[in-house]
Length: 364
Image (tube, rainbow, N blue to C red; front, side, top):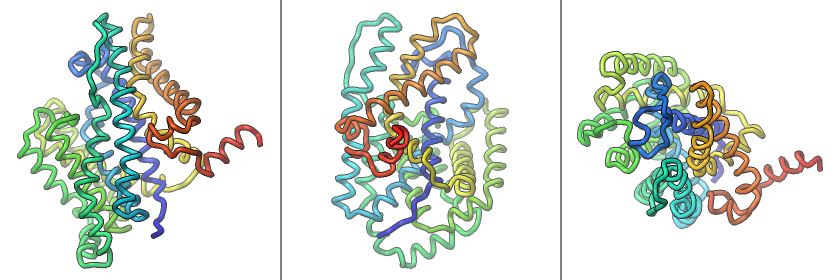
């Protein structure tokens, strides 16, 4: 089977990882940072959190949607055995390596910063997302394989027709709202290692697959109606901000989350579905950067927070430090050593495009 490469999805994955780094850096400057294990600035920068509350209802669900979409493209080229082997190498192996060699690093930096005794127990940390994805692959792949065998069947035709109006994508919010009502999460945005996070992620992963499975009509719909989704999201966010002090009922937050996500998909489909060397590099880098970013972030906080400089400048410097350190580690260590590439979810050797980029850099 051949399938069209969706460059907009690659771009959106890169952007989502970048936003995730900025979001985590913003937590450092919140008065509650230590309660969730982050190094905390002595001075808060609470105004920074207003835009983050707009982001936090959709940043993680978005990644689950994109992961479900990615599985569709992976399954188009692999049988079940090949798929599980590939996902084990790409997801499970980096997860196991991460809890042994990566998450201890920011635990140790945190303990050193606060003069605590050094200790560590195996913990997923920020890598909880990976084990969720692997579980979803195991649970849903048999159903997805069945659907792929029936791509010319009635269900796909019905699904495609259903997605041909702006209410089609929005209709799935019924399931997300029901999850919020039934599970009753203490905080809608508390996704990591919670029942709420598992079920919400499963729903987003499942529907992400179905959106791509339905064909181009989904993308044409979200592209055409993107401003409608933006408007609905802004209305719900304004209500959340002014009426509920950013924490509206879960069923409303689930609808707002999906509106933001469909708007992002619409803008991405219209403007980002273009290949390029920058995208090729960043799409390869995004996954390793996600894995190592907490170590870089904590290192930056430890070095920069004690310095005398304006508070917002500290935020900017830590942000710059985190991105630069992550890409230096990726470019000069992870990317160039075969066994490390494998441990960070990359192929053992460079692909043709990467080799061409290296030759250009070296003037060959």
